Amino acid sequence: MNPEWRNRYELAVETAHKAGQLALRYFDGSFTVEWKPDCSPVTIADRAAEQLLRQTLLDAFPTDGFLGEEFGDTPGTSGFRWIIDPIDGTRSFVRGIPLWATLVGLEYKDEQIAGIVDAPALGHAYRALRGDGAYRNDSRIHVSEVHDLSQALVFYSSLSWFIKAGHQETFLEMVRRTERTRGLGDFYGFVLVAQGSGELMIEHGVHAWDVAALKPLIEEAGGRFSDWQGGASIHRPDVIVSNGKLHDAALAILQEYPK
Image 1 (cartoon, rainbow, N blue to C red):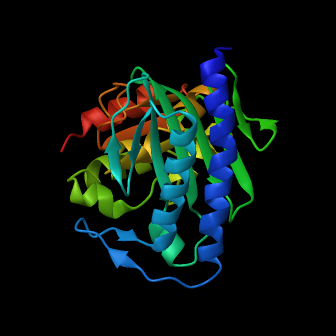
Image 2 (tube, rainbow, N blue to C red):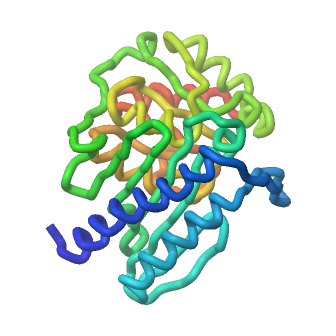
């Protein structure tokens, strides 16, 4: 294993845990909610967790780039870039719902090579390094073996995102062709696919920091990540992940019912 990858990965696992624990202290207490121009919430916990991550990771690797949801993009020269969401699921966080996590993604020359998902309110940490497998805590995880779309369990965040994007009929067609849907969104639907608890997670309205940590986790668990056109970019608003066996069938539905 490339030692530059391994050293960053091990520090990221440790630092994501610290940032998650920092956010958890606010979650168990009280805080003020502010609203950003895009009408998404932000709290002191988001900012404090990102500052901890930024300072720790860049102190150790000062030539790396860094992109965080709250404090923006800092270019680097090493070829490595950290892509961070300090609290993925802030809307859940501010309502006292434990489905939120600290996401730390690492890419090298535009390839996502590692991802850490620390969900302290659930007591779980998910992690993956390219070529090393995917784990929940210390247990190896793998996607499901379901190969028939009619037996698939589909996750999503909110129907409102599909409506805003003009894709409500697409979503309803996916509902008709699969067995069940569950609105378990943000990071949680992705990790459920990675651990084999469902077959598809479909989203619209994401940013790079929402998915950079999740792409290597899904792929190391044996699944597949793409946008709705089948490309591998983390910089599009539309994303679908699957157990791999149902990906093409699900993509066909997304493309059959365009906006």
